[in-house]
Length: 364
Image 1 (cartoon, helix red, strand yellow):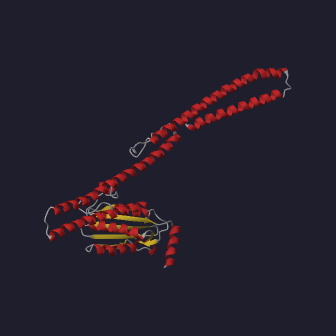
Image 2: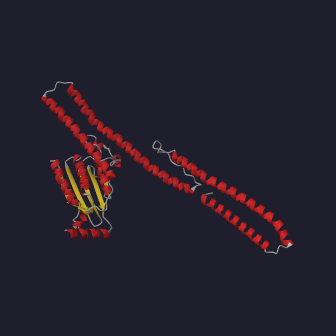
Image 3: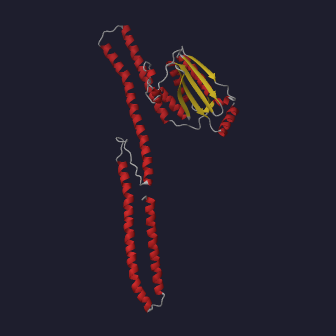
């Protein structure tokens, strides 16, 4: 019997008790108003004890039932509370069992279990993050220590010292890059999307980043094409943070360059009134189906990246930035040796989009 039915029975018993008290009161009033005749006194003498006995028995029954009701209701709550108190950070895999006869508590237990699922995933992610970060930091530190100890044990020439210092500088730069990536990822986890972000032109951001990338990688080839010319160039605008979007595009272009066979990156823009998509393609070894599932997990490096320098943080940073802008990012293998990463930003609803377009046009 669930709590609602039990409460209904208690309420019915209480109402019955009130009815009996009312009838008894009416009886007393009737007897009092009957001019105190012998028949009235006899009726009073015979009926009142019986009514009092019935009332007493009824009161005891209602008290007993209420006590039972309270115990049966409180007992599952006490058990539920004990189970919750027993769950700590060391046993987040524990769950509150569901009871088919307690629908109300089941809803609470289910919500609590779902919260534990989210907490467990967050704790596991944090542990994995710390483990991988420690491992990645330990590698260049161990290399630097080994080179320093080897140099101290030998009488090196000036040229040999220079080679050691150059190698140490490479390891130091690797640590700096890793630390910067970790800081970026940590900062982006704390940032929330902002509706007050200004409208920015995606194509202009891409052209700025392409200029920077060509200075950084002198042998890179980057082409930008429009799948079709948009009816209005304002369709190329989204609300966003210029610096964050540049960081995301920079990482995608860098990845496409490093994992391409011909150092060529092809970028395609597809824009209309409702959305804008940017596709980054390169020619190179494709990502396996198993690796695609974990592609955006921090520190994950697929089979195609084993011989490449990196930490497995770039795509995690990109994913976080795109999600902040309420967009999506996907990977698609094309043919046999071609890769494509696609970013899609959905625009606002039509009325908001029209207002934003008008505002941008008026500002020009």
